[in-house]
Amino acid sequence: MGLPYIGETLRLYTENPNSFFATRQNKYGEIFKTHILGCPCVMISSPEAARVVLVSKAHMFKPTYPTSKERMIGPEALFFHQGPYHSTLSGC
Image 1: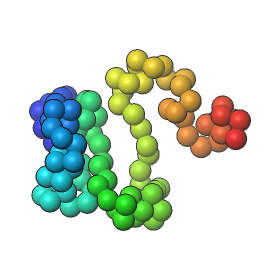
Image 2: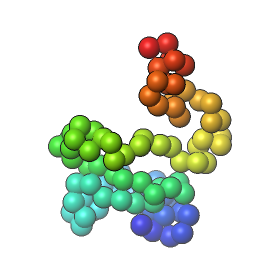
Image 3: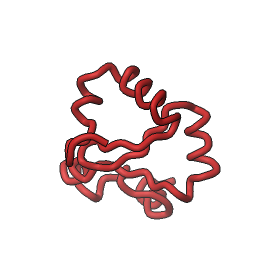
């Protein structure tokens, strides 16, 4: 998962994103974990894997953003909220 705190952030931003994902997909499979922008992340590298996660395993995952991004934008930003509270804020 890379260096402490930095993780694989530098590799993600300096490598071609396609080769970054392809290398890890070949090594770990279509769903793998890494450390980006100070946060552990689950990366999904195919539509089929995304379908498995988002449809049948959705209860196991919570979409989040890195803490650094939340501090920069503010915790009250619309896209940091989910569920009924998000619907109330967005007017859905």
